[in-house]
Amino acid sequence: MLKRFIRLLKTSPLLLPLLASIDLVLWLVDRVAVLSVRTPEKPLSLVIIRLDVMGDYLMFRNYLRALKKSARYENHSITLFGNVAVKSLAETFDSGLIDRFVWVDIYKLSTQPLYRFKVVRQLRLQGFSVAFCPAYSRVLVLDDFMALATGASERVGCRTDYVNIAPWEAALGDRLYTRLIDSGSGIVFEMERDRRIVEGFVQEPVAVQPPLLDGHHARDVSVPDRYVVFSLGAGQEFRVWPVDRFAEVARFILVQYPAYKLVLTGAPNEKPYTESFLKHLPDASAIVDLTGSLSIPELVYVLTNADLLIANETGIAHIAASTQTPSIVISQGKSLVRWHPYPTAFGEMMTYVYPDYLEQRRANLPAIASGFNPESPLSINEITVQRVMHSVNERLRRVDGLSKKYL
Image 1 (cartoon, rainbow, N blue to C red):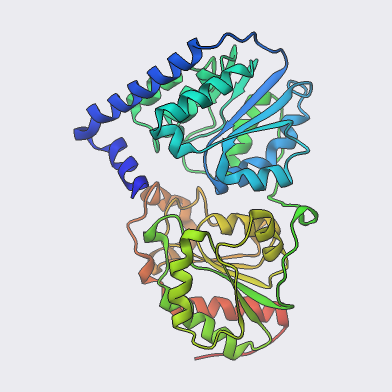
Image 2: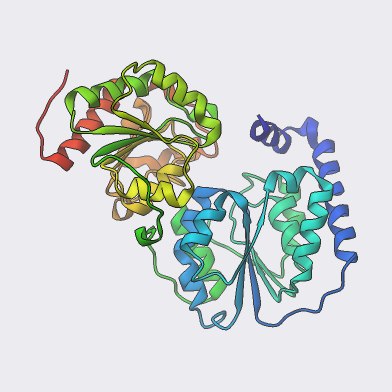
């Protein structure tokens, strides 16, 4: 609901006065916080402002090493100012590349002035010399205002696409940076976009880096010997395939591939999906429910050892790509090409199942991507159970060398 309201706020001319008023209030909070402290700038100190969510961070983190080893910033201490939602992932897998972490709740930062005052004051006290905001789809009151709040004499951002920011906001935000990186026009896979942005920041060639999470840093969880992971939720309801269809696929696996158990994962707020799913499968003896009980490092362990993941197109799909877990990802096409499907070189293990309109145009998705960014006009309900079963059969036969057929 909050995401829907924010999107409406950014796009409705009728709500322009409200949007401008919110921006002004948050600007004033920042100014008061900044004026309350006086901090000398610390030389060779870089802050990376990365306030978006899991998928964004997983795409970007591939280039942390290139940034750390660059001739321009190799002697800088590096702080990540990030969304608390990625805290356990970043601190577990990237502490060797990041010297210090500062975590914030981005929703409180946007809606609670006292919380924001404290965060801005803490940020200002660090005395950074360089601030780098690599977000392509910038948000004025988060990315741009926070870059200014650092007080860094060098503030680098990138030209935006107006997905999360109104044109007049972008014009204002542009003026808060000392340098803007042009990462090119058009819709490209986010990993390539991040490569261009980091290359523009360090001002030296940066090679494409495949996603990879080192399984040695994952945290052990008790799981079956052989299992398929089901992740039933997603950040937005229209991206969620019906639970009864997931359950039908689960029954198919239990009958056709009895060597496998099923493991359920998801955030605590996705428990209702799990409860509904289990009602369709009265015999739960082959099901391990881990919904709401896993940290991200534990989820990485579960995915690393899984034979297959079946999920909606959301953050867990990007974690699976980073653990090279065979995956079936069900998507109605939102953010096509930008976020999915993974290029074959990085996502050979990923199978995407789309509505028929997209399936029929798979050979030329870039040509139609503009009609699916930022939103898709298609319904996820158009995807049939039979299509997903077919993909399951293909994936598990590759794993097992089995040749079973169905239907």
